Length: 281
Length: 281
Image (tube, rainbow over all chains, first blue to last red; front, side, top):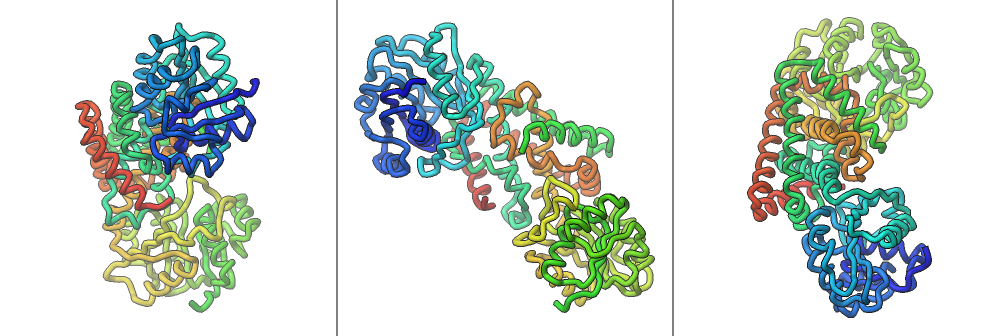
């Protein structure tokens, strides 16, 4: 991929900051502009080297961009992409990093002004941490990034984004936004809910009796609550279905234990171990 | 604590092997005898330096022991302690490392032959890994160990065990076996079940769309299935109650999302984050 002249990142938290660091480390862009709402976050992004320029003025920040990445909290992505499209150069490609895609793609797939196009991305990485201070130039190494093209997507836009994420070290897979949301409800949103419910089940007086296993299993629950309100709300139908499927597994487990059915319990735990071992460490 | 002359460890897997390594590193015993069923496991325990002597003959292995630690799979502990008591020197203290305590303590609290006494221990550490090959001399550093005395427990036995675990780096807390099992159902057995059910919910074709969060949340499901059949069965009533409490949390979460009740959802996730953050990293 030929280095881009200017990439603008709207929202320089953990994800946006990591994109900036990865772009700069790999010389993928001459100029990386960070757009944010608060000077303090922008200062952090500059200090860690994630961006070369910063501004709180979105219109000014996207002026001259060759590619815009909207990495705002998922509930604000649609608005921000529309604001970007109103101010960026004619015909600019805009992508995002939101964890729920269908609502975003449905809202932005067509109708952007002046020939601008939106094509959704979702890098399956991140952390329960947040902020550019935790940004990591290798965040995308070995991670999967989903691109969600539609029948309106231009081949050259897809190719550009595929190269963009690949050069940062990511594996790229494409699928419709609808399928993405169904899958992520199970592979990402459900683990978050399972962790949060577990953290809410253990009473405070027992916390000292927890070990590493409990800490691992609940780690996701440390994620930003407001962000997750939006992800779960945006992917509501799939998330409810995932919770039901999880509930059915827990009910089967409960029955096996209640009925002293050791063979059923053994099968349940053996199948779980096989599935988990397939994920690697 | 004055160094013991001989400590015998029955079962030199991850836990027994780590005890052996910790004892030897800290010069807490002159001789550490490993008793196992298979020569191959005993060879590994010798090779990693967890024991000074090994035998597959339990009676021979406990002959001359000042303290015996039964670190067998939890389903075999009661039998093994009885075998130890029949062969060890008169008046020997025997402890264990089982994850469920009430059934074990009930069976062994009185009636051991020739003045031998059992006092239960449970170090809250371990790993989804197994075998002496994964033994760690620092496994107990900073971990909590529960000792479960009864009204039959002698003060000097309690003091000996408290020093034994403390010198290996563990914090020690005492509580009745019944309370231990209630607490551990929530802090250890429930996380295992939540992880296993999650691993069984995500279909194989979506595995490539998982990220670190899913790997953390399901890590416990890699644990030995047979071991967990026994733990969950031994602590059946508490485990069923813990599953019900977890189910109630998941139902509350489901309702909040279904009803688009963002305030309730926010409270749920905020409370989970607060609880999780209290656990540390």
